[in-house]
Amino acid sequence: MRPFRYARVDDVPGAVALLARTPGGAFLGGGTNLVDLMKLDVVTPDLLVDVRRLTSDRVEELPGGGIRIGAATPNSDLAADPLVRRRYPVLSQALLSGASGQLRNLATAGGNLLQRTRCVYFQNVTTPCNKRQPGTGCSAIDGHHRELAILGTSPECVATHPSDFAVALTALGAVVHTEGPDGGRSIPMGDLHRLPGNEPQRDTILQHGELITAIEVPPLPFATCSHYRKVRDRASYAFALVSVAAAIDVVDGVVRDVRIALGGVAHKPWRATRAEEFLRGGPVEEDRFRAAAEAELAEARPLPDNAFKVPLARNTLARTLLDLARPPA
Image (tube, rainbow, N blue to C red):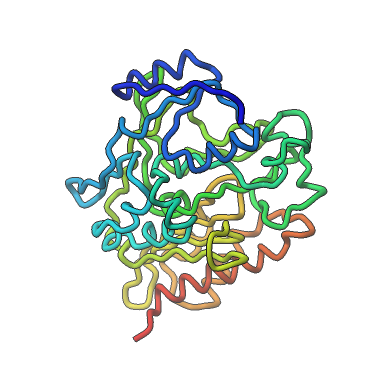
């Protein structure tokens, strides 16, 4: 690991101002991803600005039924929070499906959303990678890409976004609050992360020096009927091959409303709006759930070694919706 400076400031404006005038600096929350990447020489910040104590580490109930999650809330506390478990089980399940207990104790809600891809070429500084060093090429396209993206890819990059929590927040229509050099803003989760295009080095729309301060999850009564299903190579501590976050509202055998997002298939959490539109107003039928998944995956462009993700995503989505719509007696 290369030498770096460390700074702790008193408040959010101070942290934002300090980083804004330090182009090579980075915010430090739990550090569970950033420090790993520093050890690998993938990222080499010359200054770390500690923000762990600057934002709330609690979950607050909002008027109207939503919740506000402080950016410094540890993942383990968030997963165990009674309000989260009761109103948004999909969030708790997504958090508990990621990392180890020790990592969840240290990782923060804000940092969870800013994890970098686990593409092996991104993490190996001896190989070309447009995401790590723009213009060098993508080693994954003709190399090892079994775990990588099938939707929204570009000739520049086929990496996937790794956060389970972000997939669940995307399904629920959460909003991320930030403070940056140009002031504060509220960003819908679906807009926070970006597809690679010709700038795969940019994971999000955040500006340098812009800090996530909180996440708001809107009231969604039928989110009590929600679930996160993660398919991975091993039961513990593995990133998703495919994951599904879903919530469904069924009345008299008809889907009144539904929210779906997919993980492990794209450069960002993938909101399945085509599948949602297909399902609203229709009956609860397995064939219909499979057809909705097919509609969502129609634009999938898999590579030779990850073509299995298309049927895997279709089956995982249909199974998750069926389990929610027809729970065991």
